[in-house]
Length: 205
View 1 (tube, helix red, strand yellow):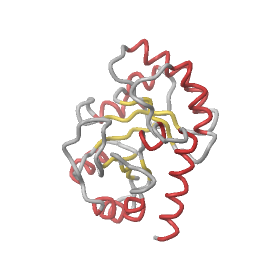
View 2: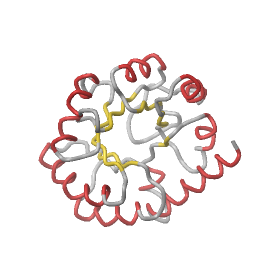
View 3: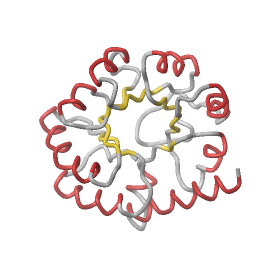
View 4: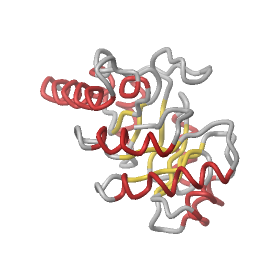
């Protein structure tokens, strides 16, 4: 689960706690855009106990250095966010490193060789969160899961209504934003809806 691109950390803290208590969430990625490092640090400090006290991994988007400085569980790097090998050295052996790989198994293999703990493919569906140029076929998840043990994350416009094809294709995790935070009954209902959809897809697999 990825945080909204902008929020008031103090108000968001309670919303996040209720959302995490609503169902199964593997990780929370802190993704703040257009703010300075101090604002990111303040948000991380406020939200870290909420996430980690529930046994959920707390990851920093884009910045391995801030992940370490803020006591987080790891970082997720996009293609323009620095060298993965350098990030692996900075994070050390115990923190999680994830890498965006768009629609490319070649990039995913390079990321795995550089020390990534998981690779992210997408965007699989239209999304308003960010401009996307890559639209992989779900088959990439199947091929990846059959050829490597590195987990995969599917990203991009994922909802309870469309996630089944990705689950059945072999995605280990689903990264969601709008499906949770913009759910008409609130984010807790969004988590429950995603959990139900994933369970149903696994039962049909």
